[in-house]
Every structure is written in C-alpha cells, then in structure tokens.
Length: 441
Image (cartoon, rainbow, N blue to C red):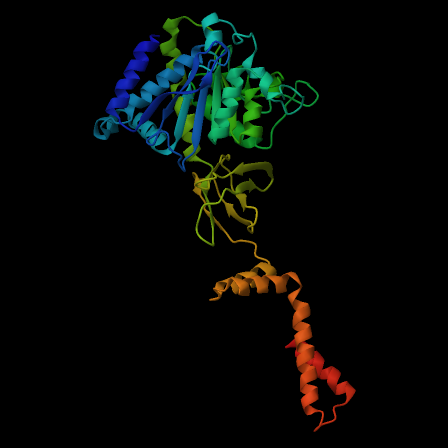
C-alpha cells in the first residue's frame, strides 16, 4: 500500500476534522533511528481524559506486516465514517456509524502500525540487532531482561509509553496463525499447559469478542472457539502481553490474524474485511462492559489516585493521579464486589451486576482521622491567631496533655480543701471519692 498516500489522506482528514485526530506522534526510535509513529484518535487528542485508553500495536515481528496495514486501514475507516450524516447512514450503515462515533467519543485510541520498522525493511523477524522484540520484556517467572539499559530501544519505547499513559486494554497483531491468545504466555515449570492469570474469565471474554466478530476465526479446528491460553499453546518468556498485565495494568491480547505471515498485497482487502469488525468491537468493548468511575475525597471533593480491587480476583487497578478515574474490565456475570482503597482513607465496597451492560460507579472516601488529629484540628479551627498560643498547645500535646490535666485537677482539689479546712473536717474516704468523681467529669 502507498504509505505516503495514506499519510497525506489522513492529514487532509485532520484539517477537515479539527481536534479529532492527532497523528504521527513519535514515542521513540528504532535501532536504525526510524521513528515509532503512533496515530492518536480521540475527540480530545493530546489531553488526559476520564475515558478508557486502548492501543493496537502491529508489526512486532518484522516479517509479519499484515497488522501494520490493517491498523492504517482502521485509522482511515474511523476518519471516513466519524462525521458522516447520521440520516444517510441510519438505514444503510447504522452499525458502522455508531461504532465509529462510539470509539472516537468514548475511547482514547492509539495505533502503532509498526513497532519494528527495521525488521520490516529487512523482512526478518527480529529488529536490526536480530532480537525478537516479543522476548525482550521483563519476565515474571525468570530473570530475563531485568537490566533496562540492555533492552532494545523499541522495547524501552513501549515501556516508557506505558509509564506516561494508563491503557485499560490493548492488543498486538501478529501473523502465522488464526487465533486470539491471552495470558499467561508462560508457566513456572516451562511445561505446555493451561496457565491462567487472575483475570482468566475477563481475558477469555475479550478473546471471544475478537474471535466471534471475525469472519472465520471462531470456526477454527485447531483452537476451540478460535481462542487459546498462551502457555497451553506454547510457552514463551519475556513477552509483551504478560508484562502489560503485570506492570502496566493493561489487559493485552496477542492476535494472530493471518495464517500467511507475508501474503500478497492483493489479499489485504480481504484480510481487512475479515478483521474489521473484530478490531472495532474489541475497542468498543471497553465501554460496553466493565465498571468505570472516579474516586473522590469527602473532605474537599478532589479526585484521589486510589486503587480498585474486585473480591476474589487478585489484581489491582489504579486510578488516575490527576482525575481519579478508573476503568476495570470484567466479564459479564451476575455480580461483583468492588472495593476502593486509598492510603489515609477508609476503604469502601459495593456490589454491582454486569449482566446488562457497563456500570458507572464513583467512590467518595472518608479520611481516617485519629483522636489526636481531631483534637489538634479543633485547636487550629478556633480563632487563635497567636503563633505563641499554637506553639504552647503543641508543646502541651507533645508532653502528654492528660498528665497536665490530672495535675490541674489535683491542684484545684487541694485548693478547695484548703478553703474548706477551717469550716468542715472532711474524712479521707470522702476526699478519695471526690477526687475520683472529678476525674470522670
């Protein structure tokens, strides 16, 4: 395909749809210095938003270019269909129109057509250093690639990218098979066996969305329903899929979209037709299911960068530092118990049902205030503008206010006895009783 023609066309779309598409964002360079260009699609490109972010990455292996071409087609399709007249498309392309509008306005989409431009130009699997980029990430089971300086520049670019942006979900496009692959990709003992992650149900649901939207992936004779657990297919280590889930809070699939790794260019329109609805539906699934919301402080109403967990699933999703927004992908089922936590605040939990679409759930957390903090706060809330007074109160508190209070009570009682001594003779038992009563009051 003519890449220059495509980029020119996209630039024209950008001029026509101002504020809709920001294109050619570089997240780094390849070994040979080729920029890793990301197409960003949103109604508010370049801004931090409270909507979920999704990314597609193609051409991880240089000799698997189909994903590269399909992602450029996807960007073009969204540009072509976003602002079409709804009356014209109401009868003919209702589903198409709604999907384009849904994605642009409700998902922050990022497309990296080629993670390995050097390998593509050399028509080989690895990058210019002959390193398989899908084996170059830190691994959970074995000490691989723990030295960040030793990783490939393409790998470091992806890792830094995910430090900047909180992606809810993503997928990489590969070739050589026809199946939707989900974590874990490896196992502790390196054996080929099913090894599911904590969100196994959610990943199976994600993979099924792609498979069943595809022209023929779900009818695979090799893979039941066209999906597979990575370790059950063949274990691999240092993969990007598992790293995303563990370290970046991102649910990632590995999509094998073509049996032929490098098909003839004449087959690309057919491959696009077969994968188009899968690509669109997987992105749209972020807003069609799961639980979404924000975490606030009850004190001032400001957003909190808290955490979201789901009872029974050993996995934590972190809310945004600035907006306090979270997006938790979950498979539809009867109910989930969702818990919001934040250091210095009391946790809250509630039960949701996901059998009928997504749920919006905001949490307002109350701070954990100790008795000591409460007393000090009351002192400062009074109309005490004297700095020396505040320092004196702090001094008293630091020296245990309770001791001073007891001493004051005892001195007062002794003074009372001194005044009454000439008139009334008070028994010792009466004195003890009076002292005890005063302390209680």
